[in-house]
Length: 190
Image (cartoon, rainbow, N blue to C red; front, side, top):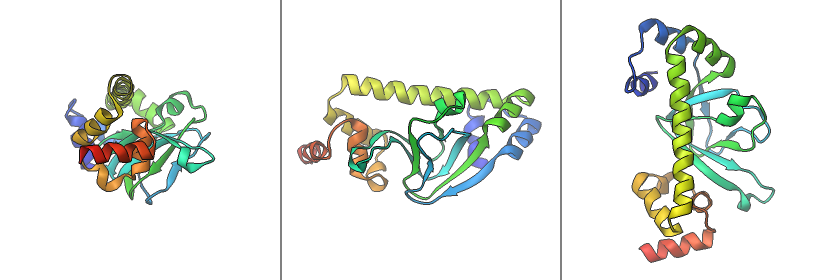
C-alpha cells in the first residue's frame, strides 16, 4: 500500500479519511507468469496498480505468432483495459502478466463509491486516464515519426530492463516489425 500512496501523493495530498476509505476497497491479487487475467470479450471490472511485475496488453490471434502487442505496464503504474472499464463493454484485447505480477485492484463499483465519497477517486481516475492517453499518444507518434530502428533504440533507452523480462517477439510486435526485422535491427546496432 505504501507504493500506491507514494505514487498518488506525488500529485496531491491525501487525507487520512480518504486514504482509509480508498484502501478499504483495494484487493491485492497475484498473477502467475504468463497468466492472462483479462480475456478477449470480458468486461474489464478493475483498475489496478502494479506493485511488482510487467503486464502486456495485446490483441490475440488464432496463430499466436501474429498476436499484436500494443502496450506494456510496469511497477508503479496503473493498468486496465480502460476503454472496457469506462464503458463496461467487452474488451477488444487481453492483459497478460509477463512475470509474476502483484497488483492492487479496485472494482468499477467500488471506484464509483470512492468518486462519490472522496477526493482521491477523481485523482485516481484522472491519473489513469492521463497515463493511458499519454502512452497511446506517444506510441502513435513514434509509429508515425520514427523508423523501426529508432523506435527500438528509444524503447530501450526509456526502459532498459525490457530485454531481461519481455520476449523479443512481443517487442517486435510492439514496435511494429517482424521478428526477423528486429533481428536485423539488433545486428546493425551491435
